[in-house]
Amino acid sequence: MTTPKTTRQPVLRIGGRLSLRIRVRSVAVVLLLAVVALASAVVLIGTGDFPISFADVLSVLLGSGHPADELIVRELRLPRVLVGLLVGGAFGLAGALFQAVSRNPLGSPDILGLGQGATAGALTMIVLFSGSATAVTAGALVGGLVTGTAIYVLAWKRGVHGYRLVLVGIGVSAVMTAVNSYLITKADMVDAARAVVWMTGSLNGRDWTQVWPLLALCAVLVPLALANERGLRMTEMGDDASYALGVRVERLRLVLLACAVLLASAATAAAGPVAFVALTAPQLARRLTRSPGPNLVPSMVMGAALLIVADVLSQRAFGSDQLPVGVVTGALGGVYLLWLLVTERKAGRV
Amino acid sequence: MNRLSAENVTLAYEQRVIARELSVEIPDNSFTVIVGPNACGKSTLLRALSRMLRPSEGRVLLDGQVIHSLPAKKVARTLGLLPQSSVAPDGITVADLVARGRYPHQGLLRQWSPSDERVVQESMERTGVAELADRYVDELSGGQRQRVWIAMALAQETPLLLLDEPTTYLDIQHQLDVLDLCAELHEEHGRTLVAVLHDLNHAARYATHLVALRGGEVVAQGAPRDVVTAELVERVFGIRCQVIEDPETGTPLVVPAARKARATTP
Image 1 (cartoon, one colour):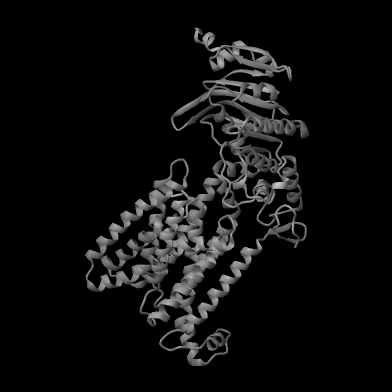
Image 2: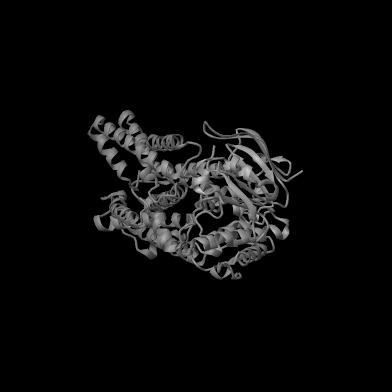
């Protein structure tokens, strides 16, 4: 590693051809958040009606645990925690992509109506068809994708621009909220109760059937998003300046928005519209790394850490499976949103 | 044949046509300045030449090929553009902004080569912003900021450099500063520069080739000495004037007629 004069930013060189730029602070933040997320995950696995100590959870995970612990950890709690990590990471990354493409801190799946769209898909399945868990997941995925496509098409006018994307998204969000309210009023008591739990966002009862599809999707979309991060960083300077540097701005936006919509829809399908993780994770990550640019990896790890910590909090404070994690993220995220609006207002950006 | 030219291009935003069947050649190794009154289409022409705007008819050629058919990064290694308005990202330093000019020379696995390092340093020294390297762009003055943007375009290492109104919003000292820098960049390495300028006298003083536009048509083009005449200025800008010899440089100097004399213009 060498420290160049001009940028004070270390460069990792391997041979003559490979060179990667590294921000030390960003790497440190990512490592720290990963440790927080994983440690909280171990605590979360140990939490419940049958508590398991930190050390025992670790030994099960490392393959040398007590057989009774093993069943609970492997079959019940580990998949739930993995879904939490994946959902949080997917929301964090989706939020960072949306905010960078729309160049607006409010451009997140929560605000743009993707959550509401996915909810409409899920509620349709619950209320109109009394569908199975799989059908509800599929409905949420389709609802999110349709809503994302609708927002892109409606906001497209010789290219998609940030402000219009946010405004169109807020409009779509309002329409979807109305649809959801209508569906709830149509529902009988049992379906309505099921719908409300789904709408809050929860990790309860998630198992391996949710883990694998999410993991597969992330395995494709995360590298795709990261490969385009350099181009995305250029678009901060405006369309003309980035296009002049050889970034194909419109194609980049389409690819990254598609990634973000898929990630957010899949995450919502798996755990419900867990409120505000996508909105807050990128902003918190940016404040920690103090680095300009999209901060994709820090946002992703921050999302995972936020969701798991929120779930630990809700379970420790209110007993296992009593309070859905979405209530905690919603309460914390709502406060954060108010603070964001006030500071952005002062800075004259909203 | 010249490296950059527009052939019979029709330029339009949505339905609003700015220019029809416009043809312009940018002479190699020239400092070409495009002048004309507001809304004559000079910035639009520059946008077409830099592929920001796709002509609805006709074509823009770079090295004999249609510019829109070439790979974006390949064009970006040949032709640089300083847009009229660019946004410096929040909290970015001068060195980091200039380093972004290297984007078309980099790849996913080749993010920062020793030549990137050298070119960025040279670009900052060339434009006199090397000592500002660690400062934040937001805290610089307008003149310094424009130098930083020029440094970024320079770091792109392109033989052709297009500048859209690089002197707008600057005071006279910084205007001359930027134009002097442009003239130096033109003289070294035989770089071709194309700029849109508002001030006709600046254009006459610095350009080696002048293109005068009015209503989307080329009214005249050539060396300032041949092009800038009282008759042409009246035809292009609609003002009566005298053209005298600039006592400093010997280039044409446009002196508008006094208010009373202009009031009697037919």
